[in-house]
Image (cartoon, rainbow, N blue to C red; front, side, top):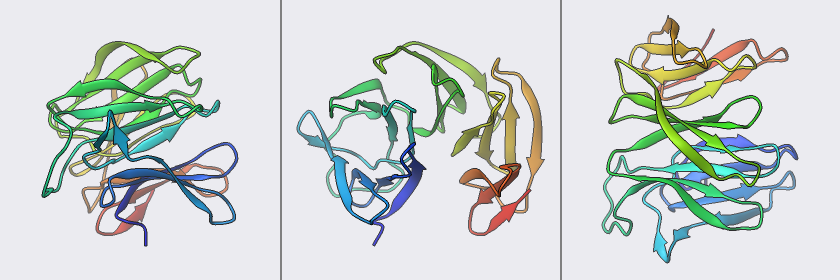
Length: 207
């Protein structure tokens, strides 16, 4: 049972990190299949519904916590982007009233990107060696609310959005679009050379 797992990512050791929106927690599963709960509360309150997640090479974890489905009881009064340090310390990157969604890191791990579905934009944060974020700015405004996102080795950003994928440079310039028969909710690079882009919606397509 994935407990409604949404975003997933792997760390340098091959461990699987998952955002479980039904159980409202973030978990990590090692190669042997042993799962541990990394976070399920902030300041004593349960998360809304963790959505997407990314891990920096040094073990710092970042995840979004919007809410796209109804809850019987909502504990947090904001939609957050969170930073989970290797020592277990958790803090907010941002606290908003609009919903963050996809999340990604630049190739060098110095920049954090957050796709904001309601605002139809992507925000950029600078990260220091301790993993703390600062200098929030809007990098790009999209014509459709972005969902999942990925970054290639050149730092270009790929957003799952209505009608396909929108691609932006690290400077925030629109580079192009990939149209698709579905409106993907997430995407990932794959195959041996990582030159294939997989689009996930009600179906799975690859480019």
